[in-house]
Image 1 (cartoon, rainbow, N blue to C red):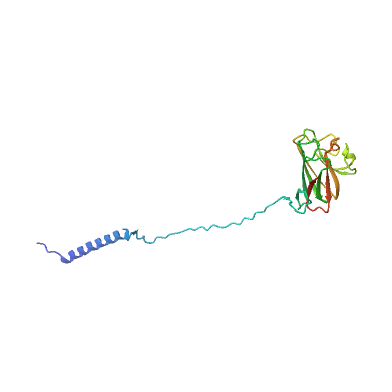
Image 2 (cartoon, rainbow, N blue to C red; image 1 turned 180 degrees about the vertical axis):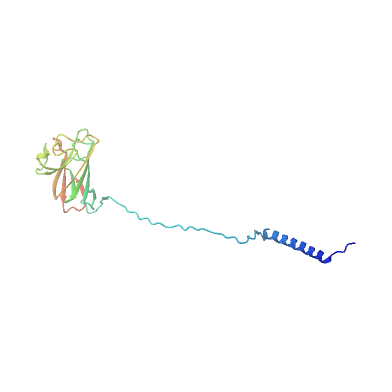
Length: 224
């Protein structure tokens, strides 16, 4: 019988045991560990986690608001209504209509000097005149020299503004129904007419009054 080399056998057994232990260790390192009701897996070695966090920035927005003024000044005379205006550039806006209701020779439904506009002296007047009538009409501002207008308002004073016509053709030229014309002028202190310049229209009642005064601070109108 062959002689067994005992030290060699022992070395082989020890090597087998070491290999088995190493295999078990590797298996344990990659197997989840159950802790109570929570299962955790041991993390691998040398793992780097990078987190990028973006912080939102706040932008401040400034808004500028521009407004058109229509006064509700309680110091206006009894029965007066405010007119739209811009105090920054000393401008007042007159929206005037030859109305299709009522008699054909009217401004905003009034006639024969019933409608009065009051504006601060030296302000600019911007007129927007609309004709709703079947007849042609125009709009003039006149520095009058007579108490009431006649058939030719150009003979009653100096024409300062003409909308829907010209200062030479006002007797027979106007705008048709549905049309609008605009014009502007600056009025020093004084009392003026506004009228339709077509022959005979002002004498038939198509006129009103503008008062420009330094005592007026807020533009308004009155119907007498």
